[in-house]
Image (cartoon, helix red, strand yellow):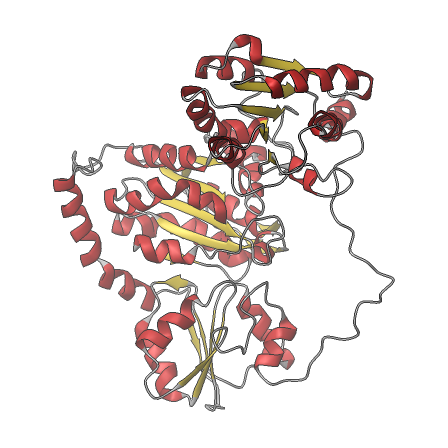
Length: 530
C-alpha cells in the first residue's frame, strides 16, 4: 500500500493491476491511451507477466478480452468513446454471454470533442447492454472502481462498463493504493454452452440478464459509490456524479453545499435514493457531464409533481464540457467568468509537425490532382486529417476509422473519377483492409494512399500493427503487385512522386500508393536514446 500521484487513466491502470488482472487489451485513442501505456511501463505488470500489447482495433481488443475472461482470468479492455462503436458488436453480446473471469470495459468520453468526431455518452451503451456502469468523480474513485470492479463483474457474471471523461483521465491527484490481489488461476465456464449464442441459448441468457436488472439496481442502491448528502435548504435538490460533482462542490465555500445532494457513480440509477431526494425537495437540478442521461430517466420515471432542471430545459448547456461557472449559473450564483479573452490572444489551429512526411505527401497529391479539380479526396482519422486545413486544403472528408477507402469506393460507384482515399498505416490495419477488399472484388477505380509513418502517431507514437506488412497485406487482399507503389515523400523526390501518383490516378482499377517516412517525433525519441 502506498500513496501515488496519478492521472485518472493511470489510477485505473494501477487499480486493475492491483485488482488481479492477467491482461489489458486496447487500441490507442485519446483520452484512454495512458491506461495501456501505464501498464506497459509497470514493473509489477512485467513481474506478473500481464498481457499488455496493443490490439489492431477496439473490436479485436474486446473479443480477445472476452476470450481471456472465458478462460477464467480477470481482464480490462480500454478505448475512447468512438472506439466503443467499433467494439459494439462484441460489447453488446458480451452482456448476453456473460463472463467467467471479471471483465471491465473502460470507455473514455471526450466532451467538447478535444480530439474526437463527436460527444457521445458511453453511459447509453451500458444502459442499452443492460449492465452495471461505474463512473468516478476523482482519481481515488477511478482506482477503487478498477480495483473492485472485477468483483462486481464476477458477482453477477456480467461485464462492467467504467466510464470516464477527459478531465478525469488527464488530471492528477493523490491515490492511496490497496493490497495487491492474487491473479486468478483460471478455469473454464461452469456452463459449457454459456458463450454459444445460438438463438435457443441466447434467449435463455437474455432472459436471465433481464431478470437480473432488479439485482443490479439493488446493488447500486447499496453501493458505497452512490452517496446521499443531506442539506438544510430543501428548496432544491442536486443530483450529480462523475466529474460534474466537483464542479458543484467548487461553487460553495469550504465545499459545504446547503442543499441535499445525491451523487451517482454506479448505475443503474439508485431508485430509492432518487425517490428520497425527490420527496424531500421542491425542485431538482441534474448536473452531469455529457448527455442528459440521468435527467432523461428522472423525467421519464420520477418527475411527477416536481420540477426537474438540467440540460433539457437550458439550465445547463447541451453541448461541450461543463465547468464550475456554468454550474454556478444553473444555481443562480454569481457569474465568475471574468473578463473576455483579449482579442490579441487568438487560438492557434493545430498543424502537422515541421518535417512530417504527410506534408510532402499532400504537396505531391495536390500537384497530381490539379488536372482533376477539387472534391475527390477522402481522408481518415490520424495526424494526416490536418490536411483539411491550410496550407494544404487537400481532403474532403473525415468520418470514422477506415471510412476513407469505403467512401472513395462509394463515390467512385456514383461516377466520381478519380476517387482518392488517404489513410494512415495504423488506421489501415484498424479498419481499412475490409474496404480495400470490397474495392478489389469490384475492380473499383480508386487510388488508395496509405501514408505510412510506421507508428500510431496521433496518440503518441504507439506500435503500428502494419509496420513492415503493408505491401504484403495489400497484395494478399488482391491488389495487383504492379499497382502497389512505394515512395519516399521528400522534396527532392517531388517530381518523381507526382509522376507515380498521376500514373495510379489514371489506372482504371484499384491502386495503392505508399508514401513511407518515419514519424519525426518517434525518430527524435529514438535519436535521444542513442
